[in-house]
Length: 187
Image (cartoon, rainbow, N blue to C red; front, side):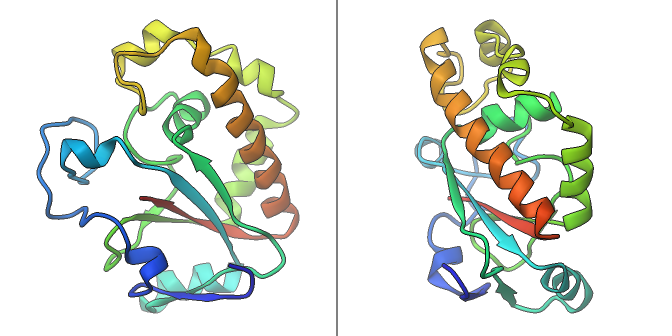
């Protein structure tokens, strides 16, 4: 992925499901609709982008998204929704609350600005993974249908979530230090 340019028509971004046309009876998908079988495989990818790419995408609706070449992408696997919930208290099927949905991309694809990432980093400050994970409550996750185990969360999943949370927080620091934004894809 290093140094690549992604087009909204690129198979890397367009593989997966057609989010705007597949119906499901699932609340909280923020306009996103999927077949139930598709929900079971959603993983999140974090792809760095430059400030200029962020501005260009918002300004002219360009169909090319340049991935920042100095920072590697990461995969949050299926822990993305748990991380989102632990950081925001929100149970919608999205990642963080500051993203702008990219139109014309067949999978859920959000653009997050360098400034929104810096604000998140400042809000979190020196909060540790353990402190954030203190909000991990199986009954709460089950009541809110947190993916990927809606209604079936157990304490056994805590290390899995903590591992991916730690990876995300490290990546967040790298992105902020590099004055980068990010693209989040759910596929």
